[in-house]
Amino acid sequence: MQLCCKSTNPLVNLQKKAEEMIRYRGERITPGRIHTLAMLLSERRAVTHHEIEERLKGEHRFDRVTLYRVLEWLNEKGFVHRLVNADRVWRFRANIHEYSQPHAHFECLRCTKVVCLDDFEAAHDFELPAGYRSREIELTVKGLCAECT
Amino acid sequence: MQLCCKSTNPLVNLQKKAEEMIRYRGERITPGRIHTLAMLLSERRAVTHHEIEERLKGEHRFDRVTLYRVLEWLNEKGFVHRLVNADRVWRFRANIHEYSQPHAHFECLRCTKVVCLDDFEAAHDFELPAGYRSREIELTVKGLCAECT
DNA sequence: TGTGGATTTGCAACAGAGTTGCATTTACTA
DNA sequence: TAGTAAATGCAACTCTGTTGCAAATCCACA
Ligand SMILES: [Mn+2]
Ligand SMILES: [Mn+2]
Ligand SMILES: [Zn+2]
Ligand SMILES: [Zn+2]
Image (cartoon, rainbow over the protein chains, first blue to last red):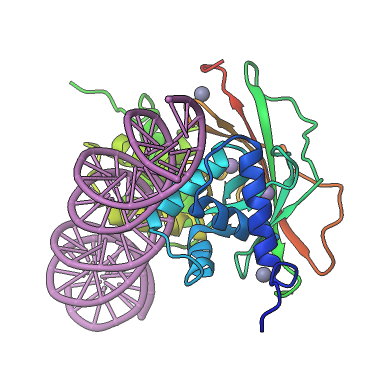
């Protein structure tokens, strides 16, 4: 005797949400895209390819390359954004607004965790050298996170 | 009949300077360290391992690995600093003050060139999440450099 | 509901940046 | 000048991400 799992399993709801987000933009639905985006929607941190792969094991097995391509696609389409930090590894996070919004990041020097500081936008008050044009500004605060202090 | 080249070749002067800088701190002098640091002292941009290797060809041939180790050492000792940008490659630049000074960077979106914006220090006016401690702040302005505009 | 054809996937091989182990050479100390 | 710790060269390796291509899948349209 089994109850409907829809309302008890938040992951399933996120899969529904991911599917709707992709369908709403008129893009093709595939298991890889849904599971990856759902996973990213469930996570506050910016996570690596490797972490996503680990998290998705069992639930649905993908090829590494497919995951790389899905992440590239999600980024291009604006469902997620990505950033590189001191360990030279891409990290991905679902965009919280419909389209990517500029915001600062926090990077823990000990555990390498990366957190998006949503709603904190960077600015600078100095003049660039002559002829230089600013397109975007990236601000990363490095330090120790709450668990590593 | 040959004149003394010391005053006509600025590279030689920089080698002297590099040697003095290292000796002044009581560290070991090696050809790799001197030529690498001299090259970096001659350059305003932050340059990659690959660029340094190219520039040093002929003058003095090093093993790739030695250059990696020299750069790591120069960074640890505070003679240079390094940063990673969107192409996930380390870039190095000699420190203009005796010890590393925080400053912002400019990254060209077209030619990938990286420029240190010396004397422009970053700051942020927002509160970090509870328990988070800030150690350093990294500000990167991305856009088009004077040659790429 | 079935089907054609563009998209996506899996697999294998590849690429670039950086690292490690170890024997040999070098720089400095005494 | 000899002894020793540190730096170097070389080969093999790791890690992250890419590319080519044939097979599978999605979906617009009949
Ligand atoms: Mn972010
Ligand atoms: Mn710099
Ligand atoms: Zn931490
Ligand atoms: Zn440029």
